Length: 463
Length: 173
Image 1 (cartoon, rainbow over the protein chains, first blue to last red):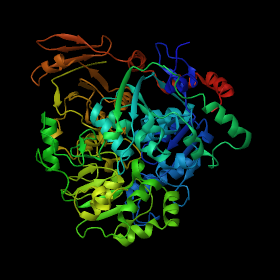
Image 2 (cartoon, rainbow over the protein chains, first blue to last red):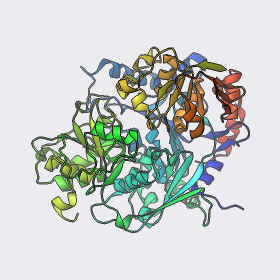
Image 3 (cartoon, rainbow over the protein chains, first blue to last red):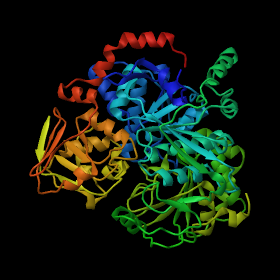
Image 4 (cartoon, one colour):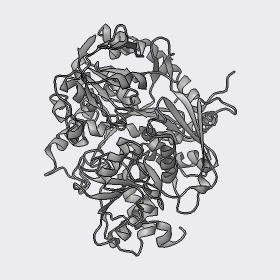
């Protein structure tokens, strides 16, 4: 028997029909739906007179284009409001559970899936959103799909798919204080490039992954797509099981014991074969920050902007208004955004709050703190983190994607620079003409205080 | 499916789908007229209309899964995109909409210029360069059949209804 990887095992256990000349028919255990990439899919169903095959395996929320200033759509962007109302109509008509603006379970789709216990080891999970890779942190096979595929999954609970190759990413060693999961994944993407994972499913392994909590593992899997990978995964372990225990949709009683027994069989076999391997020793890792216009363009926080080696790099530096050789520490910052499906969970807000507690945001800097879900917001407020942020002079918002995708009016002005805990620094991503520096919540919070790109370790000592 | 034209160029590498169509244009519930937002914030990337073949830099279509990027290109009149590599989700979305993703070697890519007309022929999987070579390109065999015979993937999946039901009965998740 050939040894199998975690990915091989989940792939094989979801084959309705194996791959031949035709792609495999892959069964989907969980389909997450949001307002932006689903309307045309529901319209397609209607045109063909089809139903949703498994409304019980389909869950919807609204996150991308909703306001974060209030829970009301009154007076909000009419196009966005129409799209949100269309999702309500679609979910109602097709019998899909919707966690809408009034729901206490509303939030960014990749934050609420895990929170509700819907995201479970061994499952296949899809959503019309590239950051669906987040759910791989639980040892699920999770990936983003287009709207045509959303329609196919709604109608058949299946996808046509070809198997990807296995890519082993070893993170060994021990993180230094003040260095986080965000820095690990930025370092990996810098190493393999924005297309380095294309055609692969990444499996994150090694001692440094094992010692991360679930939220940090989600941060890493979340950005797998920024290396072009189909998905990113971490084998489930006791940390995974403890996170899931007693969550709303987690199995209970005997079903829980059965699930644990099943989940323990998922990790890759010893000596399983991988098509590609990369290793990073995190002991030597510094906090990372991007300087360019894709997530692979990152350097250690204390580093200098490298010399461009091609036309694309030169145009990125021009867009970012940076000079080769320039230090990033001390670079002026207009806006700090703390949130997103990458770093908008409770542990991220705790880290940011630890830096901001008892300090003031710089007078020239605007700071948005946007919890990833209603539940994250509730817990943060229970811990008093909202007071820390507000006392420091930051804006404390309602949950949503907000300035990560800048669809809802939360956005940069042309020429503004932002330190952002989100996942993409593409040109105009956070607002036309805006310049984004991606970094960890610690770096973002330190930069908020200084009004310049700053190192949290120098500000508050060893965290 | 055969497209012949002098190509237009987006030479930059790693052009992500946010550049192809910015997020603020995704607040739609249909696909009508979406081509007018193509490269909305990137005048430097905009191309002349009326040229159905686009030549694009390496790793075209990376980033967001938005199918709107493919819809915008199609609505603008693009029928084939040639590059040395496409991002996975973009390629999938392209194939499902009849936009032909043509992957060529860097050597072939270097031969492409706006003066030499190109022919992309899906049945023979060839790219012909006027005054230059004809090369073959890879394409998923199933997607090719679907495109050439106008077969519908969802129809194919629906035909497997009994297999899906049987799978559901034996499957634990």
